[in-house]
Image: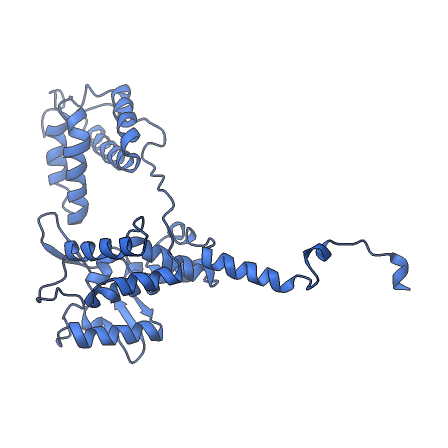
Length: 321
């Protein structure tokens, strides 16, 4: 580390700062590298740590937020963390990151598919990837959890799947196997009969017989790549008229369905592998399908002579005697 009295540029400080973060997950480190190279360094990288002012940071964030709100929040949080370390190192007296609420992401409400759309999406996928839609929706699995499933993780006898690892792909195409990042992520899930039937059929047709064999592979043998899956998904969502839906929205859809059945927050947390209640609470809202059920229930309590007769009429007290 340089002498605190020397002028150190943000880039010259942040590069080794990131290099020495050995406990970061590979994909997190790649995200930080991306944010630094594409959104922080171009505007602020050559500025000295001592020369960065709150007004400079405020202007940088405002300009970035106009184009990419979510990216601006991620970039601001990263910059703030780096500058707080610089304070701890005695290089600067205080952090210039003082924009209230700048690090908070206000994600747009994600779309929810109907039950009919889920079926249409599954049918529109290639045969060897149809199960991806079912697992994402009805078992509420993340993409990495789906890609990491092995034959030995499926228990047809007890209709259970075990989530013990996930598989992600680095920016250079390397396949990365890792354990769930929290105890809540490692879980066993009950599987409905139709989905378990589809699981067994899939394994018989597309999965090697070894217990450690991944459930999803490309037709020619190697583990399924994110690119192949994304291309299939893009084609399927466009074909049913839902180009707005991301694959992760199926997990959101499934958890919303579960909440609509009356699942408690604790039940949603366990099923989704959430460690906090905040994430689970977002799914406890109405869906279009559930709203129609509620409307039908209200219809059933209506007076058969018409809604005009539903208006409450004051009771004549004398009628009781």
